[in-house]
Image 1 (tube, helix red, strand yellow):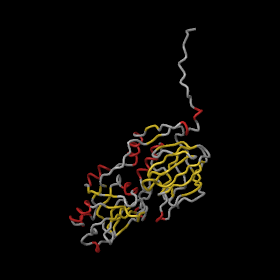
Image 2: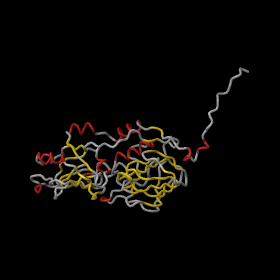
Image 3: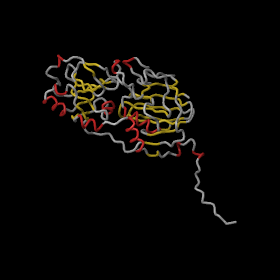
Length: 335
């Protein structure tokens, strides 16, 4: 069973949870830019951690459903239709064979996710299926691609939707790192007080943040040697502008890092649109540790919060297969 990509957006790719344990080989984890939204898609369809989905940056595409399948749409809000009928976002749906799924431009956010029950079953490379551009693993999806799908573990499961989802407006939490103390107290105070805007200069490697104040620098910035870096790190470049590193970041760097955005808050950076305001606050290592959750824990919490999606009868191609008449119980006569 396959899903055909009839029209691919400019940054369409297969993504999963990334490739763990390869930093020593110079390979960052990669995987979904918004890890939370990717996990939401898995939760909606009852799929295990590591299942591969389709990531859509800014624009989706057109897909031909070649066999009946359940799908879920999460992440950045995008205009979507199935055979011309609008689809609810942050929810699961059932697509019949021959259906055409159209996903347009993002209304809010950057990275949207199309998850298919069973998951995308392309051939793994170095233990993962996700496209990792700077490592040369995989490639973006193109018009005409046929994506193999694994079997749906629960094909008769009812469509569900996420509940109680809200986007926090609180400052993003930053834990201290090896070079945080190299920044003078007044610089760290100014960093917390500043309101940044997400620059148009952004991709899966990182996001530049602009602000109107003085540049941020350490006292011995030019004497630093290259050190390991990871997603979430906030690097201060030579002009004193901060960059927040994302999933496909490099593994070594010489720019000083004022701290690291907590994994739970990093999706807000990835999903911030150009010009969107962002603020930060420092937390302790103990606070950061208490806020950490594994993929399994997050999936469990998401699944417990799912609610059935009420289907519109006008959109139900299988409407006549339901018993629509509430028959009274048969009377027992005693004969």
